[in-house]
Image (cartoon, rainbow, N blue to C red):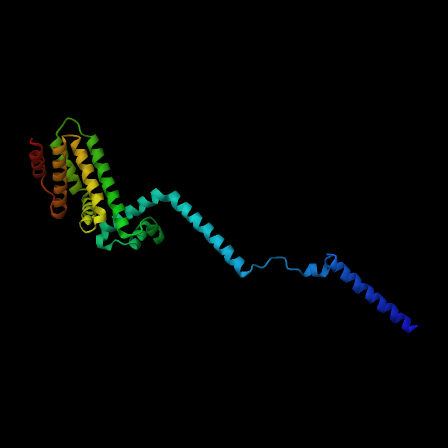
Length: 243
């Protein structure tokens, strides 16, 4: 009796084992294994590197897109900050780091737009020239058939009076071209624009002479401790104009 019971139990176990093996071979899942299966995929080192590289490329592309979108405004902000640094500390204190702090932008922004210090100086010089030319254009629109000599004297005294600090930094940037050949064409373009503005009210030769006299008076004026008398300025322009 006991031997028959043992045979039956052995047969049952054999059938269970065979059935289980067949089930696994046929692709059936083991419920317990399914419960114990992890709910996430592990990332292999190569996949992690690939994912990290992809994220980095996406972030870099996004940063480049933002930089391009902010381009003109950010460049002008940095250029004006460079002018402020030169005005407050002098040309020899101009660095990418000082400009970044003045502009309130990351250091990387200054080196992104202006790789070298000469690039930064050239943009600051262009901005200073643009501001100067824009101011003189506005002044020219107020000219009528009145006293041209008096109007020129007013312009000089404005630059040496209320706008004296602006005049000083403009000339410091302009003269930087003496030791930096890369800046010379910018300074020359500034000269040409001023001469053209004055030529519009006289002739080509007289316009260049007026431009030279105007710039000379400003350069001498920012070095002198006192502002020249109005009569002194008017005498110079009268001689140039033959008035």
